[in-house]
Length: 149
Length: 414
Image (tube, rainbow over the protein chains, first blue to last red):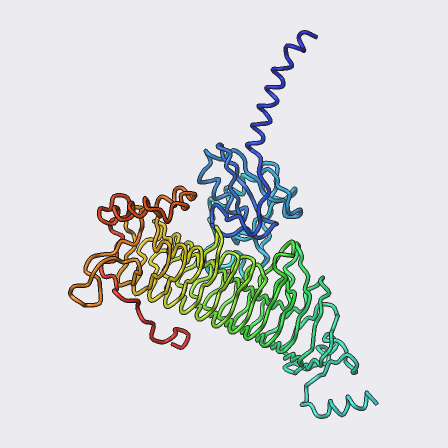
């Protein structure tokens, strides 16, 4: 009992610290049609593709697409505490990138930046694959659709 | 008797024409398209038609009488065209209905050549007119409206994906996500459209080279117009009006190369023009009037040239994030110019430095904007003008015009 009493404050402090740490790493809801993408500057509009990065300082950046989040993370890896993507099947739900899976749906109904990346609970690609893809391909070349027509 | 009447009517129509009417022998567009011969004509009489998505798979013209309405009851695409040489004229399309899973449109054209979509009306569209993998299509004189922000998700008014040689002319577009959207489009022209009151952009280019837009009016769109990741784009005689908000601008140029911006008007916007990574931009004969920031240039916009522009009534004429002069200004009119013209050649004898020191302070600390009209800031700006310490020294107009530059003919008429 005394041991417990002695341990309790420490546990509370630890929990509070953990909470504070979590809070700082958590995303906020994306303000669609208002937030500007921190990478490409476009106004974030399609609720299936919004993404966020939380920096070590606790600053939250919104992105309009998986492509832009990946480009930002590649350029600022040391400053990113956590990164989040929208589950395209459930707009409004953010998944941590490490727990998400990704697909490329190469139709005219593509993603905002044209690589066709979409996040969800299932898919062939992991976040590491996405980073590799974006690093290698960059954004599409102008005038050339990702898919041969 | 009605049957007889319709036979008489049919007899008066040219061969190959099928008439659809709510009470005639042919009551759906689907049936009419089965009956119409290749290259034939379907005439749609006034009435509201509710039927499964109309599929046009052969060359045909569909012409609606005034009052001919195709109604999607908020849950389907209205028409899909997959054949070459299809004309759709004079129809009204209602209630497409938003969807997260598919890009439903009033009219979607897929993999077709030479389509003509003219004089139609789209009301409550999700996407309006949608062209994917098309060549040589014309979208002319249509009126398109969507419900704006009331929907959970939104589509674009005229949407082109992976297409070339299109003409988009004389359309009126409002309430969509982006009024006109181009992705992977080449060699196309956007002319004389009015795109305003859209949720995000009046016009949006992604990865679309060699396109030309002229004499359009973009007014009061949520964020303005964005032309991005493209090269060789010509922008002439357009008006960018009334775009207000912390992230709103008349025109955003982002990652653009070799583009020409000539004879446009940027008026009453929080920011007129934002150029980020706009290489070798030529900005000539434009009017920047009553904007908060007329031009915001980033250092990544190398080799931009501003000549013959008017800067009148703006809070800040030019701002930049660098001390390096990476763009040139010459022969512009600056209402804020305080110099003189002793040799009376029409151009000021001392250079004009359009970047105010205060604009740099605001760039770093936005709330300091409240000091805009203070004496302190005026003294600061005056001191900086005399001895530039922080503003880009080379960013100056060596030949500032003494009078506003006259615009001879409206560019639209050139």
